[in-house]
Image (cartoon, rainbow, N blue to C red; front, side, top):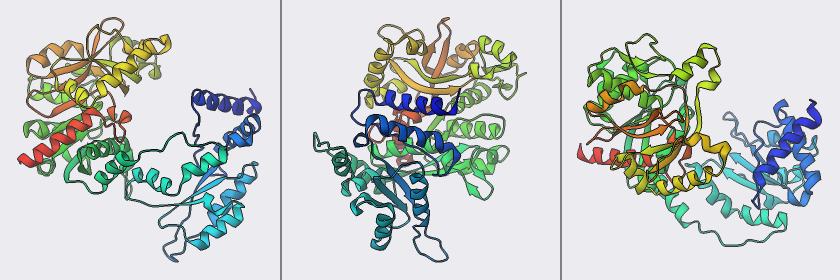
Length: 465
């Protein structure tokens, strides 16, 4: 294999494949211009331009204009360097979107226009804003869509209706009410800095749900290790309207997460467990309700006599050969939902049930995708969520957990007829968990059902407290 032409040819093949059936395809080449990682992608795009014609391809440079605090002057030099480095690859931007703390002034705009040799109306200011979802509205004011159509020699087929989107953005900026949510995790900080982006999909899913409900969501990230052995720290959770334990791996802070889950269950605070958050909720319930004091996940304690969370026998055989990649459930899997369950009602109320069932019917026609669906049952309500995990609720303990009151409101049926538990809930409580990652499919205007229900219940809890 040679760097040229094989790698650029593969990049082009994938771009063309992604564009099938669409009028336009938006390709992002990430990173910083000048990085070695960019070279094959820039080479591929220039080659693609030659194949499809420049009239069918437009380059947009997204650049950052820093304002050093010690001089408080917006600097265009990094943008000039980016333009120069792009030109070395034969690429000249047709549009430049200028990111900065403040709007671009006339002087800097003229500088960029001159250096890039493009018309001034193609130099677009995009300053920092309160929410990323305002960006489409800002770009619409700049008439970027119309300018792009002119660049391609195309005409608009219809006038877009931005009113629903504007309403959602307004709800984010000025919500009617606000709830406080604690995310109890382990990837909270590094050195002197907080890592809010560690759980960015969850943050955004909460925002999507809040926007649809006109409820603001104030998120606090709490290090689970602080709850390991401190009742005083745990009592601080009473100040929140909802608690989330997100996905994760490893032993660090696990007991703190379990203690936080126990506090939420005992005090009837709305709880949402995601992936690891479901597994540890099962561990907590097994210990404190079912009387299995040694209950644990074999990920943390391989010798536990009550392995309520464990790898399946087929997985164990692969793990013993150190073939870890073949032991995870990755991507979209179907879950059959229990009638009259809270989870089913949330999927019905948000319209996602019909949406997912339509997608499942499409996947059934593709044998390469259908295997993920497992064994589906006729006339049963089925949904689709993405996964990334290795350990499962141990089928040996399902009957005991159900006997003591835990409801498994959804399951995935493997080809060998082994049901793997996908959802849990507790009757009469806003206490739910999912083995999947519903935050990955959440969108503004189409929130995840579980996050929608969680935020809605958080407000009810706040109003009743």
